[in-house]
Image (cartoon, rainbow, N blue to C red; front, side, top):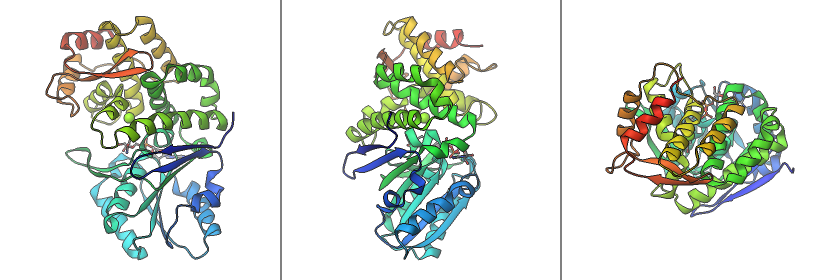
Length: 366
Ligand code: NAD
Ligand code: MG
């Protein structure tokens, strides 16, 4: 297996995603997107102490005249706010950032979404270079150009489409990622196989051990393949008007579980999506679309990645159903789910009968 991969993302504003070990020390690649002399490195208090010096040294080695500043937020989703967004803009102002400045977003999806949104807005849009350091950010949030912050009224309610100038995913940074965050990222990786390519599911099945051992070549291949599926879909549907919805396989159930648990203390996003995919596969089987064995196989693969595959105790199927009726993706046509026509082929299904959904929820309680 080779370990440096490049995935091209097409569309109006094309860019490349580079994936491999040691990219943070690769000044040639990292500095290539730079157009001006101002750089803001945005990060969080877990990631900055680990990686910001290496990133800054690489940029300065390539371009001696750079003016570099740092903007570091406390870690966590609760920091993805308008207040932190305003602070990020203040940091750009203090740097004297001009229209050719670049923001390097070094961290997980929280930093990527927040810093990406600041880059989208500063002087009506400057370059953002995504340097994702979680598996979830590498396979999902750093690619596709969606940026946002949360409001008290809900997640990701304010944001912009602002594709990055480039993405650099250094697989070596995953060595310091907490185990639970790594496993959560694999839920989204499995999602791509289930929704788009059964051969990728087979590949994952054969490489679970190497992936959980954080083998660079295996990680780089899994990430590159995941990014390719997302890039294909996003390239055809950049503004989420159609096909991009397929990326939400497992997410209707998953969001309901997260919301019902109040977003704290329970399953994290990837874990909720893992359970959601098991439920969506069983719903597909119940509606006669895939074989029950296929749903079982998906469940086993998720379990091998150490992910939960049953509803947590105490979640009421009726309450989950009520959440799903409110899901912003539930259109006017009744309950809407991404289901499987067969393994590796996802489809949006509207008007799914509530009785079938309740039956699946009822049999999935621990
Ligand atoms: P995160 O950014 O909160 O990171 C998870 C934790 O890992 C944090 O504590 C962080 O400090 C720490 N961390 C990150 N990299 C590390 C490393 N290499 N070593 C040690 N610790 C490290 O969470 P996330 O799961 O990466 O991202 C979740 C966010 O992404 C959510 O806000 C979600 O809305 C967003 N998201 C956006 C998109 C999109 O298309 N824009 C898609 C999916 C998710
Ligand atoms: Mg997700």
